[in-house]
Image (cartoon, rainbow over all chains, first blue to last red; front, side, top):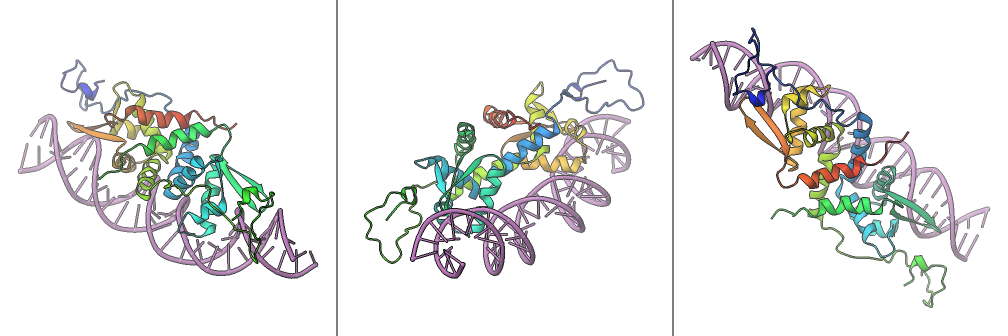
Length: 131
Length: 131
DNA sequence: CATTAACATTGATGATTGTCAATTTGAACT
DNA sequence: AGTTCAAATTGACAATCATCAATGTTAATG
């Protein structure tokens, strides 16, 4: 079976009626596993929104490592339910955790995943914004 | 103006008719910049799909650091147009690049961003899949 | 207990997305 | 030139998503 990467090299394949063995995959490795891929996609999906990235950034850069919903709500031009919605998505993805103290709820990066999350943010935020 | 983080500490604020100054943001920092947030979100969005993550993984782990569309198409239970569609999204996000050689097109991670992309994948794929 | 304030939840709506079927483009070979 | 095959593109459709308006929940307060 010939590899198309080598198609200029005439092989000794006994060229039948339809040679041209198309694509012998270079790798048929386990690749990724459907479950793992879905899990990872969920996390990236939680990060795939400007509002949510800004929320994370606000939390990560805050003095105490946390921010209350009212602080966050005040930082955006959108209603409080929308912020709540985004917070839920981040929470469901295990990126942030909420702590109710009195009337207020304070969100912080999930304990133990601080650096991981900051790393993801930094990596992508390092990319220059085109001129 | 009292900080609610300190609400248990009685302040000397001349408690008027409505004290209770809600949320004095701990940080009013520039945060992130709308443009930068959108750009980052676009990249995460390109990563927010199991098929696309698997494509990236297949490319990243392949021997020559590239894979042709026919290889990729053969690896999924979906039509060739769908794979083409996902490749376009990854390409538009500047994560992969295509190289047409003969009848075939070979995709690889964008030159110079190899490690960055692999880093993003590794970070998220390290997360244990729940039992 | 009634009220108020902070936050979450629900339901509706317009926009975006992933997939397929059908068609088109473009290169290689006869 | 005509055929064949790899890949991209187009159009359609169901599903998902971000937002808002309205309502529900829970904790502090009078």
